[in-house]
Length: 322
Image (tube, rainbow, N blue to C red):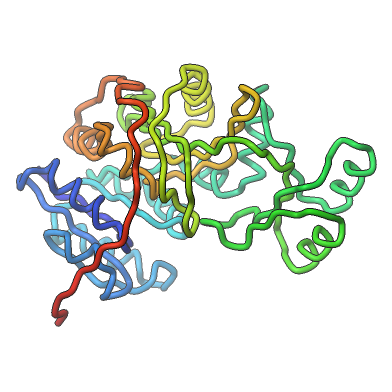
């Protein structure tokens, strides 16, 4: 069996452990990061400290790692390099290396949050009113089609960086003056739901959906959550995933209000809250390993227990690093 390369693994120690567990010693998990004190790399069977993803020769070094280590799959865990990885998807697959990523345009449209919302709208689904033009927002407010509070965030941001609840005209004006490429949205005061989705990399079929109600967030990631099922939500996610052409592992943010579901964002990678899904038996690492070994996965949507809680907590790794 070939080995798995996980790029920029950072603090995702548990995810490294999950992959090692599923490989059962038949192959290696190789991890990279640009910081030698990224704790997850020391969980891997082998690791490399690389340059940052945005340096000129970064991908040359990743290619070298692949050639020296019989890599069969590449997975990235950070947003900034996903579009570059998507651009190189065909290149790697021609070398026999599967990549946990969709096509470039899809990945780009995931990070452009306005493009995502426009696609949801084009499908005739319930959508969050969203704007990139300050004057249009003012006009909608004057017409009574939009009310405070509003929600503001970078159009192509990551995590919870520079997001804000906007309560009045002055806050709106200040935010738009201080930021470029923003998106202003109606404020959905409802239950936030995190959806972990797996679309088979061979068949393109939606294989698995895990939903959790988010109870507490920390630094843009789910800190506490409870597993949850809803067939209407599952059907909506299946339809959206097929039409949007998602592939592999995806993390989707959804709001529920008054019985309606609103897709907010799509992250085409493992989400920080995926740990909850795995511990409930939703095994994306095993599904990816099957695909790497040219095996299709069979659909198994919603096969997990409800009302199982996840609570993250801090741990520490103390070691001598050469």
